[in-house]
Length: 227
Picture 1 (cartoon, helix red, strand yellow):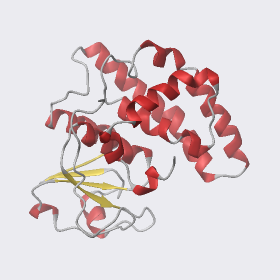
Picture 2 (spheres, rainbow, N blue to C red):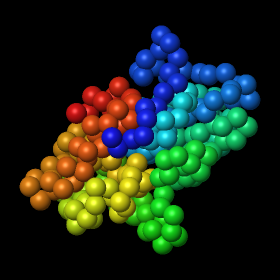
Picture 3 (spheres, rainbow, N blue to C red):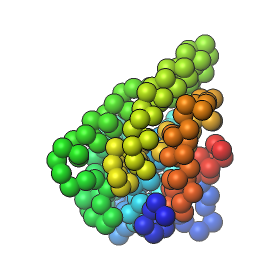
């Protein structure tokens, strides 16, 4: 198994992924609360870290066009993912993910040595700056989407040697980098990006992660419907 254990997502009985909902004041909560949208890669990234840690949390689905007032009160940007841990409010996905990894140290999702940790952080920055804008352009549609598909495919194929080198991305064990890469790979067919034979190592990488209970439980219903 890729993930150590299965995460409880903290959904309330009787509510589905398709429903945005308000929750009690964060000062009254005893568990982690994650404000997340239903189909955003960065939100999926945070949920995947929580799933890898087998952490129980409350998932609050947010409508991007109409964020709940309590999120706006907690986070001046009203952005997702936003993580609440009692009186602590965190936003910016990298901050959220690294906090979860340090707060719940087993299994660790970052290597011990500083150089490897720095290498993974730089890779995440490159993905955020190079891959994710192309995903946004594709989702927007229109003529620019076709060019964005081509660019994203080329960028992914340029990383094939990294996927060949190990079962995981730039590391011998699953890391925080995989929690960003895997949601992108999951969405490729939905985005209309076909990697072909050249991209088989990337497809194989994805299948290894996708067939785990943890990955399945990290997803919303909207994300499950992408494949």
